[in-house]
Image (cartoon, rainbow, N blue to C red; front, side, top):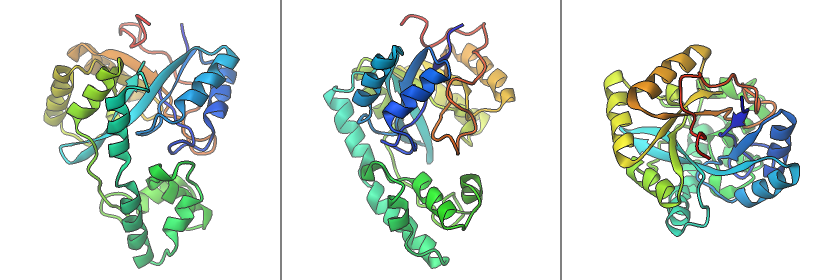
Length: 276
């Protein structure tokens, strides 16, 4: 049984480790096939590929694209992509655009509730200023002692209805799948259990994703509970999706699940890597 981890992040997006350090951690944890999937960014792929090659770790080029669907933010992972594809490169650059303006608005809301200097504070935790995100603000709020950990931050700040929440319109589902497929990749719905959609909305989403050429969903992921492994295994079977597995690792101190430590996919499913 291969130990495959096809979803994690480096400090090129909102992780805390360099791509090389993430590769070393994956190797040390017994990962057999590894993908770095930074948010809307492919700038860490070269370093990740080089580090993996040096470690003898089979590597898959990946990315996690933020989209807006039915007024919700959903993530689509692209695997086996050609990171030099012009449409993908341009699309990701456009998706990253607007993050700084959004970050300033988030900081203004936090200042209004007695937390000044949040933009500058968040920047201290950013490896790539083009990708300043809620996670970086969360780390700053922990640093200054406003919250005990990032989970407490997201219960009280930066989420809908709380100070610091500023919605952002990302790419469309059609764009994300087109970019991934145009770059020779496989489109995967990341951690579907995280999205607050009704059964009817999920059915519409999965059918649209499939019609556009999407072919897989994450079933076993660090963002799912064990009960959700079984639920999304059934979803994969019902819609004819391939199944993916990934820790969604961001940081040794913040992530619920470490690289390579998830249980295997259910044997009844066809893994997304079955023909690689």
